[in-house]
Length: 631
Figure 1: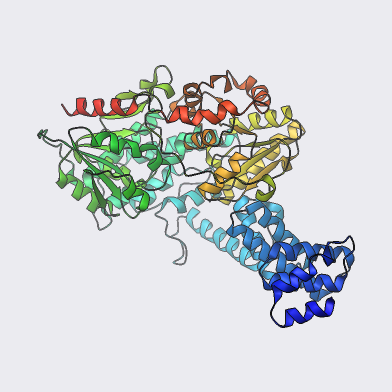
Figure 2: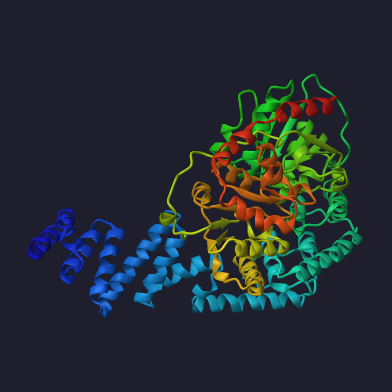
């Protein structure tokens, strides 16, 4: 049989050779020489799983592999890891890369691959020393020291005029670092208002908020008119995005910034800042403007508004800020609605909007796409409204109304906004459902057996107050594991993991009970949610899109109402779906409720998504509010 299989392999008939060898290799102690042939046959057909299964059998038969065989196995394991990554199976990929390095610790491809995934998930035990990493750390340290001394960065350093660069500064410098002197308008904003994504502790959060308040005072005290230059409104392309995740009332801070921003925008573009004359036409023009009219949270949330307004006696334009357009963009624009791609440059976009003479501009989100804030700070239409795509008041004097959701707002909600508040029923929209769910097993996804809790939020949404809820819930559900997801900012994720490990020690919990999955596409994300046992909603900033995704896959969740709308979305959805019993009355009962819900019958949860897909009259209410506002 060996000679026959070898002859087939030499003739290029790998499939026939594998069929011949498979029954021979199924016994308890297969012949090592036949195993080697089988591995070769499987590799020739790119059947990596079968090749690895036979390689593991070879290892058991030959515990002391020679170097050549070990390297073959290491390369095979690395190829399996790369295949898993292509399939968005991040956890099996990490395991495969580790196996590759056990066989050949110097395998350069496996080292690079494991290091990249470990960096993404902040799995510090897998971060391998390398000259490239040491060099990068050294360069970053030198650049930071130059900035702190008030010196300009080296020409090779990234430009210091973007949110991303200053975000790195905030993560690295600490709340007590001096604010570096800067000359440009955007760097000045960033120097005063940068915030980290994740905080080390409650004390760290408080220190950063104090720094932010002082920075706001200094920024607003500088009322010198900016000099118009070729960058124009780009100098104002900044968002206080991370402020709202601190869990406090941000109305006054947002009002200060909004007032200052409008003053700066008017100084940069005075010809666009004069109040518009209220000339009414027989068919008013309404523009829905966003940089997120594509397959995204904002797109899925607010696409139904386009169709709803298209049935009103108004001209509806979808204004998509370039370059973020895709097939989804065109699919959500019905007949009779015009789609306009606005230039990515905010000055050019502002000029076109001003010239178009809109009666009403609606910004579904203000705070995510930084360019939109510079536009909204100017009176580019007769009326300008904002909605809860980023659920915090804009603070802008140029926004005349804020659209929100009645079921999600607490009593006295108007005190949280600088704008007059208008409320819609239901969830305020008719949510666009994801595509068909792709069912996979836990084993295929590389997830462990046993009770699996998931918190599918980005790390910056996990407030230090949430840590105790995690610890108490893990303690209440023996053998349970908590699944988190990686971030595009590994340093922030590393802070979160360190913060959790410190608290877990006080509860006698093993930090290894927290699993971090690499980032995945939305279809794979939904598949992962579907095999979990319970979603833990976060306090202060609850799930919006993630809560809807959780209901879509029929996964039970435990929620807790916050003080502001941004911490009450999941609870509102559960109430609308007849699942209000899954909302904990207070923090003390969160863990016990989670313990009860993990054993709940999932039949009612499978019906919940259909319940919240009902618009509850939100779309007719939107039409009525728009028509009334245009009168």
